Length: 246
Image 1 (cartoon, one colour):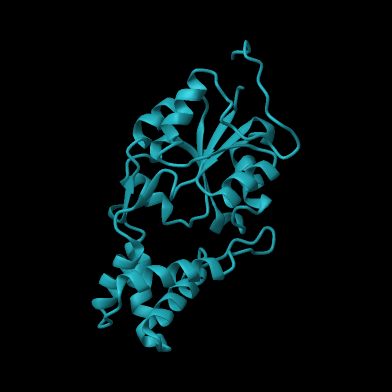
Image 2: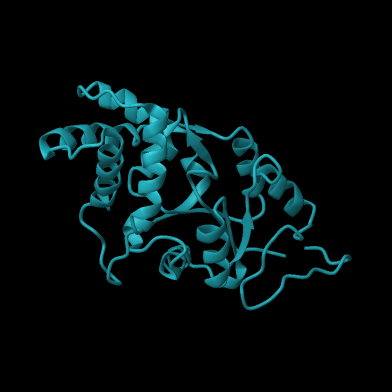
């Protein structure tokens, strides 16, 4: 199958944290006088992430704070759950500022080993684009990890006003790239956000499952004209004759 564009998720697909999130929280909290257990912070963060509804704004509205307030809610819940107390704003605010800044730095993240070569190969198939539940901090991260130049457009949930799996962010990304849904492929690592969200919005999709299914696996398959690993849009089933090429 010929695609007009490949859309890639960012965190979890192209790169991951350089250290566990609980360790980052514990280290930065300690610099503010709070001694908190990294494992407890990790668990509290995961719970807060799932319990805090993803940002969804009125259509056409771009949040002026780049969805920073959403992150403040997640961080506040994480810290207060772990500490077992209600922390005052004068404690939360500077600690949150440091955490928010830390995760904007490229050194807080690391590329998956297969990414550089896979991006080179995928760029031979179709133009590449970013489609991510992230905010504007992603741009310097991509630049610092030296992969920004691969992407023609960058579509962010904080700019679209909706997060995956909401169809609005997919439509926003497609319009920005000038590509129809039926000729686009979305690549990500989360079943609900990336696979189900993309196919329900009319895109084809590929779900990563490292170490078994990687970007390198996808690049190899597509370059050899094997699209059997792809998921079709929700309206149909992708089937490819064995002798079809192109």
